[in-house]
Image (cartoon, rainbow, N blue to C red; front, side, top):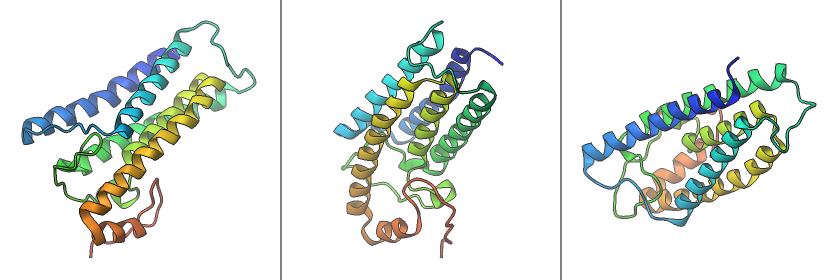
Length: 196
């Protein structure tokens, strides 16, 4: 098994690579900015960055503070790897299925389509679900109480972002979004609906 820092860097390379490719290709296609300037998006980016930096610092440290020694690598490593793999699958599907409606934050001046197909049949916020899975995966792989503690405010900030986006989507799509919201869970679920 490779060192934990190599796992985290590899995961970030793929995760951020997909994100960057999506942003560049969409900007080239539309010629419009895709980054909103709302507080929730900025907070999410800051907390995401803090979590990744702390995780990498813990991974590079010989004696990281907050290490949970009683957790078994035989349990945490496979479970953490499964969560990281799932985070990549979900984030990739979210980037693909959102098509040209992808934005980082809210941009009121840009009208986008409401995505309800693909992975958006199972979750209204799959990209944020992939963040949550990533945070949990890193916390497990590193067996670190500090990361588990950071996970809580990170999830809270993600929820703020989700609530802001939900308000925007309701104002932009009205009854269509209200119907979609009734059928599809905020985070993840198996209640599949048809497109009829």
